[in-house]
Image (tube, rainbow, N blue to C red; front, top):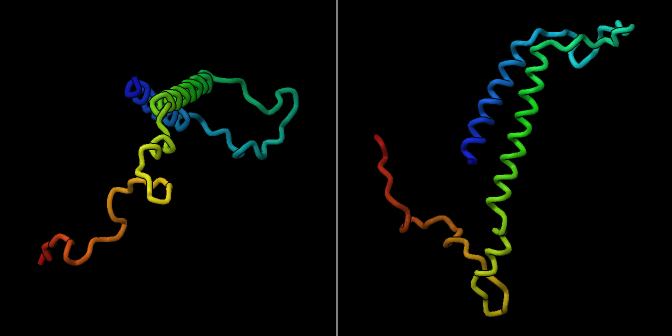
Length: 118
């Protein structure tokens, strides 16, 4: 299910990029300039392309929310604190998390030999 939503999300993202790039530039970036005002309010009538862009944007947001909910459902019940419950207990009573071995780099004796490449 997650893969299907993810593929639809990717297709929507690419389609949204394409439709935005295909639209005609209105000029006056971020609504600056133009001044006109008047009865029209400075906003042109919505075209079919702008309606299609809005539809893609709403669908993109919906798939984003769906992916967030799917990811939250998968991780429900698994917490870092829950994993610490299985950690070994030190002699003074504190829990010691398993860090997977030494955090120090390997010594020269333990390091694997790497060919020089000459």
